[in-house]
Length: 119
Image 1 (cartoon, helix red, strand yellow):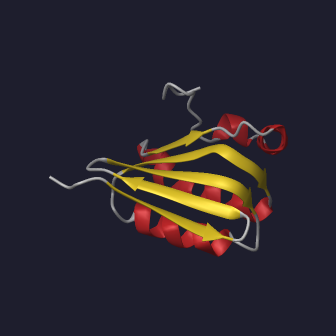
Image 2 (tube, rainbow, N blue to C red):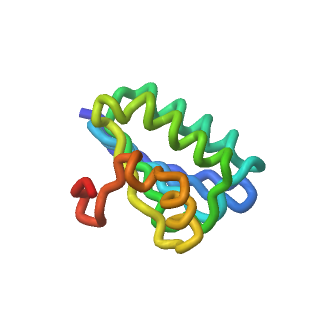
């Protein structure tokens, strides 16, 4: 049985908080996701996806996302979403919610409510 672990990585305006357990991983994004820090997110996601566990990406504290960030979320959705191994917690920031709505990703990506149920 694997013990849970957690770590935090800071890259400019983005903080990545990772928690790993036996069957699931959670990656919380805090701050702003843009071209300047997208490589850090991609690297972390690559490690988490390779574990084969279910992944929850918590965007609740994400305040800004640009097209680079959107592309990363779409790519991880294509890798894990088909298998049902990906969940996204929506951002509380109006700006991020608006981007998701305008792009149609609010309906396409596997967002869950605060209690973990698919929306």
